[in-house]
Image (tube, rainbow, N blue to C red; front, side, top):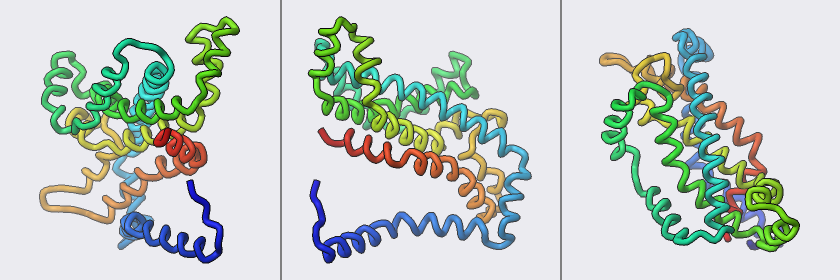
Length: 262
């Protein structure tokens, strides 16, 4: 990492960073502006009056909680094995798993549809939870493994000399050090799960099981397209992920930078 020492350099860097944020900030500004266009706050009232907002938010919360739990446990334990344990052929397994990052969701729809139909899981949250967790797990393991690589192996050796088993070393020695990467995994998984659209659209046909990303469908019809209500629904949908990032920002940034670099 480099350090900016002079005032001129700091000002120049601040200007460059501000300009870089504009392409990302403008869509958000337009979304909020459009949500309040026309009838103002009444647009949000109309969205709430659809009667499905509490149900959709509850389903999204359950979906996110389940996927986060699976990815959190799976990534931290698998990354510990890939980084610190001696497992025959672990590099082969690791790169086979990383290869899954190249698979887009759309090519999985047909086999998943057939599988969940046969298992009678179609139109249930499980039909979305399992694929989303599987799709997000490889990247989470990659980040967590790089983070574990930065933890001195001497800590593990010291724990074993004291008579601790591998599970005890992981729980009492490694886990207390994983707060930054755990925060990064939780926030990234929450954002990706909360904003997922394709899998819920295909596998959740019953309105009682649908999620917040499907809320704009109430304002899109064959002969109508109410953009103000759609943008109001989008703003309501974005609030939980923004709050999660703000609350976990410090640890998230530390974990993301530590997990991206060895």
